[in-house]
Length: 291
Ligand code: MN
Image 1 (cartoon, rainbow, N blue to C red):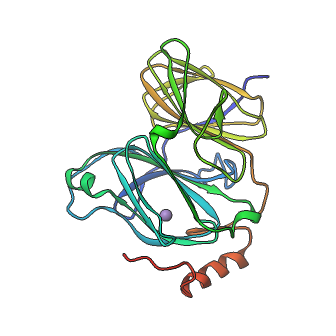
Image 2 (cartoon, rainbow, N blue to C red):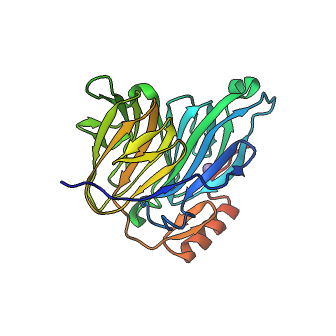
Image 3 (cartoon, rainbow, N blue to C red):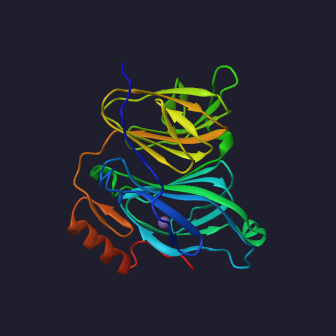
């Protein structure tokens, strides 16, 4: 086993709005340092850094839109998010909860601030990942996993370091709650100041970590809040030390080595498949969902 190299520490790119409810920094696929498939199977990461929303009578969010060919994974750190889709699934996630939606063959959905949160306003912070599916699973039926914080695997670290909550994959024998189509690890390290945690992932996996809260030293380098650490493919291990109370989202997964045709809300292998997706939406094949 050897130490993993850090390829880049990336500051949050300028934010943009998704609908009127999500102010996000897109760390990938657009970041030049990471490239289009450099975090595969994680295709996209939109990070809603912590902001304060004022009260609103009408919940902010993003209206009905389609997805095909991948999964959306929404992690709530502050605030509450509501979701409805044309496969009949709906849910509300609050602080510490995760919604794992497999769009696969296609659905329509809408994503909003939850009504009571919307009325009061308050801090809001979230991450949305787009997790790619390999060709053989792209046209499987949609699926929905609501992963409340209570059902996540919790691995308590030695001393007063804190703990790791495992959303998918595993950490030191503690398994995550989500089922995935390809091998991957998604977890939050919640560390007290001075707390340490060690991670080890196969060198060939794409690995990164986003500082949600506080600041850390990762393999000896200081990483401030809202920054993304992009690891290279040399070595397996890295060690994090919280220089103040900190939350770190850690991602690692086996790359999906297939061609990518990405267009708007579709993530397919070929442009013919993207065209088909557009046609299928227009023909009503993604179902019905009221605005
Ligand atoms: Mn969506």
